[in-house]
Image 1 (cartoon, rainbow, N blue to C red):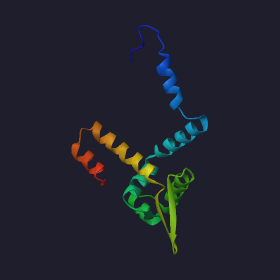
Image 2 (cartoon, one colour):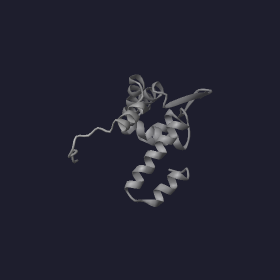
Image 3 (cartoon, helix red, strand yellow):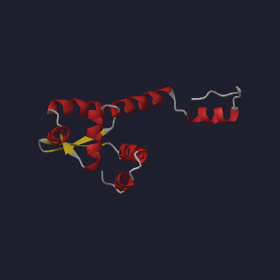
Image 4 (tube, rainbow, N blue to C red):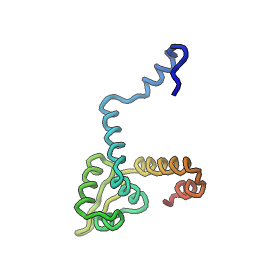
Length: 130
């Protein structure tokens, strides 16, 4: 990356940029969410939940991990309000907490597929299938 040849600060642009940066607590929460999504296992879980709600047994089969390992990851995701659950009798089903999480995952996948120049993959993500 090339440094500036002349040191000149555009005060108007700096002011605009500072105005959109959230408060420290919000930045910390955002960093924790991205950190959680930076773990491959948790990202597999979240990506699977974009398609359909699943119980721990199903997620275990999808991810190829023990139910205990899946439960541990789900606890982290629940604490960050990335996933939520509902109980149906003795079975607990997990789903994404809200549309924002789904949108974040879909947009991230579209971005990755865009980098790969794979138009078919972009189309399937934007059309709702993974």
